[in-house]
Length: 622
Image 1 (tube, rainbow, N blue to C red):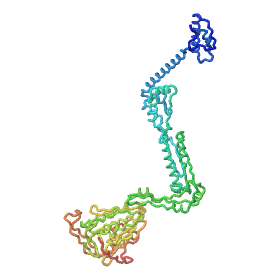
Image 2: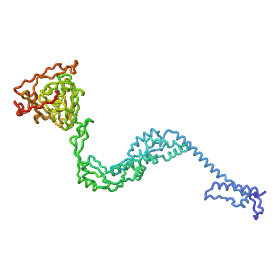
Image 3: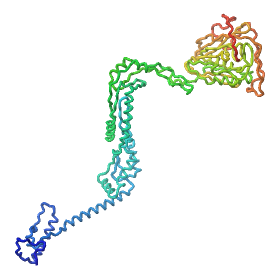
Image 4: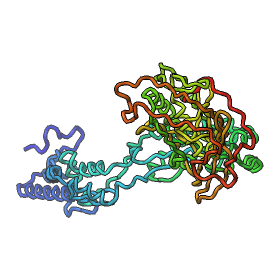
C-alpha cells in the first residue's frame, strides 16, 4: 500500500524512510476527528473567538501520520449556507412580486399615500379629488412671485403657470400611479414602503419649471422699463403728474432677475422681488415747458351728433411750478417724480350731460294747415322734415336756408301760393314760411337768441301779428343761436292737419316765456310790437322786453292755388277754404290776443317813434 500518490511523491533529498503502519482503528479515529474539525470550522467560520477543542493536523507530515491525504476536501457547510440564502431571497422576491401583482390590480390609492398633508390612502381617484378640493388645495392661486421694477412696471409669475404647481387632478394621478404603474417587483416594493413609512407626494415638480416663460416675462418687463425711462414718459392721473427723471441710458440684468424668480418659485418663497436698474445721468426738466404742456382750462362736454351722445369732458389741470422744481431736484436719476396737481371739473361733465340731454320741452308751437292745397302741404312737409332732428350745441347758430337748401322741383318742392314783390303768385316752395314762422315762435318760447328775422309783406293767418318769419332764397333768412347751457334738438312734422315744432333741451331753472303783442294802424296797413316776457318757475316776472316791431300791408288779392288733385293728400281739408276777413282800418289798436300785457303801457294809440317800413323781400314765400 502506497502512502503518497504520484502527485505528492517526495522529491530527492527528502526523508523517505517508511512511516509506521496504521491500524484500521487509528485510521477510523483520525477520519472521525477530521470530520469533526471540518464541521467545527465550517460552523465557526468567521468567528474570531471560536477555537476548536481539537486542532486538525496543519502539516503534511501530521496529516500523513493520521493517514489524511494531502489534497484538501471540499467544505460542504459553506455551500449549504449559500443555498439557504438563495432560497430565502427567492422566496422573498416571489412574495414581493405576488404582493406587487395584487397591489397593482387594486382600484384605490395605496395606504399611507398623502399629498399636501391630506391622506389619500384607500381612496379611489374620484374620492381623492373630492377630498383635496374639500381641503382647499385648489385655492392656492396666490402661490406666485411678484416682481416690481422702476417706472411703475411690474409682473407676476404664478407657480401654476410656471409648471411647478400641480393641479388637483394631476396630484391624484400621481398618487394613484405610485404602486400601480411599475412592474410586479416595483409595485410590491412601493406597497411595503407605504405600509412601513408612508409616502408624502410633492405638490410641485421642480423639473417641470418653465424657464422660458419666466424669461419671456422678464424680457417684456425690461423693454417696458427701458422704453418708459428712456423716453421720459409723462403720465397724468387724477392726483399727480408722473415723469421719469432724465435718464439717458437704462439697463436691466435680465439673467439675474430670471434666476431670482426661478429660485423663489422652487423654494416656494412667494413674495415680491424689487428689481433695480442701471441708469445713466440725464438732463434737467424744463418746468415751464411742462406747465405749458399739461396745464389746461376745464372744457364742458358737448353733444356729438355722430355718436348721439355727450363727448368726454376735459378737467382743468394746474400745479405749483416751484413745488415741481423742488421735487425734481430731490429725486434720483431714474426715479418717477410725482408732482401734485389741482384738478378742476367743468360745470357740464359727460355723465351730467348724458343724464340731462333733451329731457325737457323748452318751447313748442302748432299751426293749422286748413285751407292749404296739396302742393303747399307737400312743401310744408318737406321743410319740416329738413329741420327735424337738427341738434345745436351751446353757442351753435341755426340757419333755415342752410337747413333746407334751395327749393327746387328737383329737390321735391312744388308750386304753391306765395307773396312776392307785393303780389300773390305761384312759386316753387310756396308755404315753407309757415314752418319757419312756427319755428320762430317755438324759439321765442324756448328763450333763444334771435339773430335774423323778417316779417312778411302781408299779414298771415297762422300766427299772431309780429310772430311770423318770412324766408326766400338766398335771402332773407331766419337765424337763431342756442344761447342756453345745454344742447337743443329740433323736432318738426306734419300731423293731423297741422305742422308742429318742438324744441327739446334741458330746463335748468324752470323759467318760461310768454309772448304778447300789440297792433296799431298805419297808412295802408298796420304794425305790431311783440314782447318777450320771462317768468320764474314760481310765476314771478323776471323781465319784459320788446322782441320785434313789424309792419304789414293790406291786400285784397288772395293767392292763386293750383287745381286740387282728385285725391288730395289731406282729405279733411276743405276744397275751397274761405279767406279770413280782411281787417278794416282800425281807429284803435287791436287788443292783444295772448296773455295780458306787462305792467308798462303796451297799447299806444300811435307808436312813440314811427317805424320805417321794412324792405320788401325779393321773392318771399308764404
